[in-house]
Image (tube, rainbow over all chains, first blue to last red; front, side, top):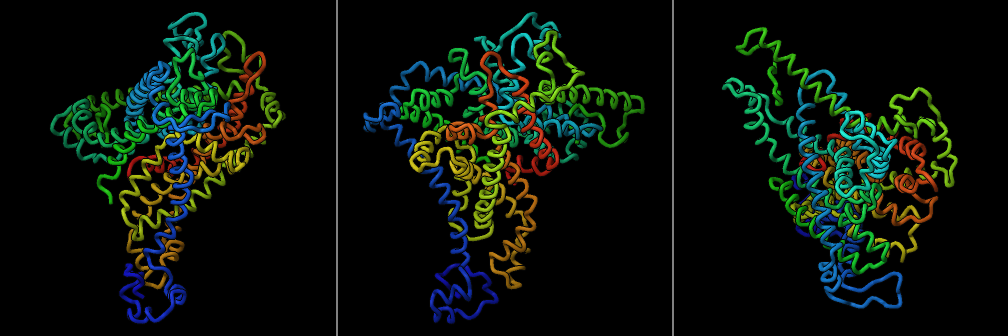
Length: 323
Length: 298
C-alpha cells in the first residue's frame, strides 16, 4: 500500500506494506485507489488547466503583444518586436496622464464616499430596532442590478429637464432650471461617482456589518460602566476592532474601482472630452477604436500592474494567519 | 451590541433614572429612523424611478413637472421590447444559457480543487491561495485583447463558448476561495471517520462533505450566476451579432434615432432586474455570507 511514499488513506487499518509491492500498478490502483497525493493533483488539475489556459496564457500574451507593433487595421505591417516603445510612447502622452489622474480621482472619490456611507449604513443596521430587516433587504437591490443598467438608469435620472435628478434639485431649491450634469466639466465626474456609490456602498456596508457583528457586546458594557460616552465607545472600541474589516474593504474596493469599466463606458463614454476617461476606457478605446493592439495592451499591462501590486497587499492581509 | 450613540442595550439596568432612560431611548429611535429613512430613500429611489418610468405612458415620461406618482399605467414599453428584432426574450435566453453553464462548470471544477486544497496533501497551499486571491481581483481589461484574438483564431466569437470559457476562468478563483474556506470549517473528524469506516477520499467528498456544503454551493453558485449575468466587457467585445448578445449588451445598445426611448430601456431593465432582485431577496442570508466570505476570510 505504500505507494511512492505518499501519505496513506487509512494507514492504521491498511494491509502490510509488502503486499502492494507485489501487485502491478493497475491492480494496485484498482484495489487501493489513488494515493491521497495523486488524487489531490487529479482533482486540482482541471482548474489549473483552465486558469493557465484562459487567464495566465492570455495575460502573458497581452504582455507579449505590448512589446510588439500590432495594428488590426494594417495587418500587412506584421507584428514586429519594438521592445518598450509602446510604453515609452504612452508615458509621453497627455491622454495617458489624464487617464491616470481621472482613474485616481474616480477611485479616491468613490471608495472614500462608499466607505463613509457604508460605515454609516452598517452602524445603523447593526442596531436592534424594528424595521432594520427592511433596510438589509433594500441594500441588496442596487448591488444586484447590473452596472450597465444602473448606468442607464442614472443617465436617465441626470437627463436635463425631465430627469428625476433635476426635478429633485429644483424641488429642494439647490438649483433652478435644467442642469446637464453629464456635459459639465466639473459635475460629470461627481455624477459618475454618485452612480458608483449607489451601486457599491451596499457591498462595503455588508463587509463592515460582518465585522461589527463579531465585536463582543461585553466590551461596550464594560466601557459604559467606566463612563465612556457613545463617541468614546465608537472611537475606542468600534473603530480599532473594525480596523481589519475596513482595511480589507478598502483594499478590495480600491482594486475593483481602479479597473471600473462598465459604468463610465455606458454613462459618459469618457466624456465630456476626456473628463471621465479612466485608464480602462483609454485602454479599451486604443484597443478597439484605434485597433492599436500594441499600445492598447501596454496601457492594459500598466493598469494590471497597478492592480496587481494592490492585490498582493490585499492577499497578504487575507492569508496572514491561515495556512 | 449598541455601537451608535446607543443609550440602552438590555433594559434599564443602568444607574440612570426612569425618565432619562426613556428620553434616551426615544431619541435613539428617532435618530435611527431618520438615518434609516435617508438610506432607504437613497438605495430604493432609483429603482422606484425605473419602475414607474417603465409603466408610464410616453407622454407622462416627458412631462414637466415630473410625474412622481403616476396614476395611469401602461404596458406598451414591455410589449415593444419583447416584439423587437431580435426580441428581448432572445437576449434573456442568451444570458440564462451563458450564466447557467458558467455556474455549473465553475462549481464542479471549484469543488474538486477546493476539496484538494482543504483536505488533501498539496504542496505550497499558501502560495496557491495567495495566487487565487490575486486572480479574483484580476482586471478583465488586461485580457480582453488577447482573449479576443484567441477566440477569433478558434472561430469562437459569436458563440456561447466565447463567454462561457472566460467567465469560468474568472469565476473559478472565487469559487475555489469560498469553497476551500468552507470545506476547512467542516470538522475534520467527520471526513476522517467516514474514511475509517471504509470510504475512499472521493466517497468522503460526495457522501460527507458535499451534503454538508449545500449552503456554500448555493451561495457560491448564486454569486457566480449574478456575476456572469451582469458581465459587460467581454459580452460586449466577443459577441457582435445582435441575436447572440446578452442582456447588459442589449440594454447598452437600446437607443432611438431621435430621442432616447427611456420607457423601453426602463422596461427592459425592469424585466431583468426583478428576477435577480427576487433571487437575491429569497437567498438574502446566503448571499450576504458569500459576499463576506469572498473578500474576508471564512
